[in-house]
Length: 325
Image 1 (cartoon, rainbow, N blue to C red):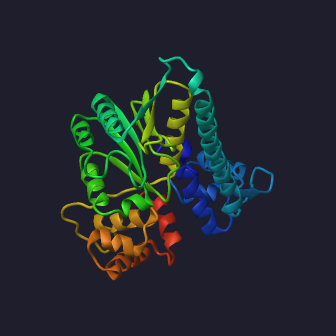
Image 2: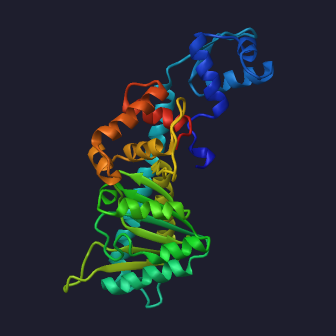
């Protein structure tokens, strides 16, 4: 994940945690408890003060005390949410402009409309066959062209080194066989993440061409889709994907032979954790894994014990801050 998505740099987070435990501290006291020099400790404490996470009396021998993190970091989260909403609105506005003006465009315009499920399936195959570096994909429930398990072009592309970043919505992952197919892709190199819902269906190759099924249908009930070349609309779609990718939960694929240790989670537990954070209910996770609901709950209980938290939101926060996923 890009550095700009980090809420708090690791060094500042570590210093803040020490400050909370001490209740208050001077730079020399922080330096004595870390590997920081006096100058570095002073700089970190002033950085926390600038973020609104610490306060200090003026003077050379200032004593810093921690401030609640919810206001400072909460404002940052709000700004990111607002930026995501602006990106979503931009896509909607540009799409509306396209639909109202498409009849006035020349035949060689960068947006091409294709009609029919067969034609859409063929274009999706061609898009993946022609990809050289990466494919970006929003996978929603009720796919209109390529049902789960039929996208053989993805496996071929993964084998030749094309990077796949795929976001699945929660409902789609609960469909029979979808999770198994997703894991097969992950084991070949696909980077998979989960969100409760996705705004559109879209596949983007090398950030130069996108295919986006349209909401409307023809009079015969056939599927229609837009093939989008380099344009502001394509830029908006890729920006929307990047924003949702940053917010999505990574899928941690289990290994072939997972062995639990007393003080660390194993891959099977992290797999359950990734599905839980992604929004799948215990019953759906148990059904997908072929285990009992109680087994799922027992694995999550052990993870909460390892994290020393007593709530699932607390577990999700601990997993994010400690890089479990």
